[in-house]
Image 1 (spheres, one colour):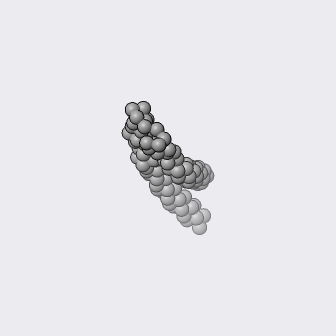
Image 2 (image 1 turned 90 degrees about the horizontal axis):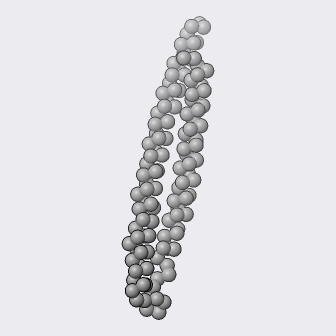
Length: 116
């Protein structure tokens, strides 16, 4: 394959890497914003002065065992899984870029050798 092909492939891989890095940065900001909403799930705190009884207990149960549980799962597990997948894909692309650069260097060296 020609140098032209490898230069195009290199440009494409660098663009892919840049898009993934941008995605990771935006997702990190979204995770921080998401985490800031944790307090909204547990507030207001119910007390004998605000609301009590069976309905209040059921409401607290839904908040803490339902909503907070799923919120924590998203915040910790699901975000971590996505960040791990992004990092893995970025590392794969970095390896591909390195291999393409080596191929370009080899082809340029071969081209120079045939000119001399």
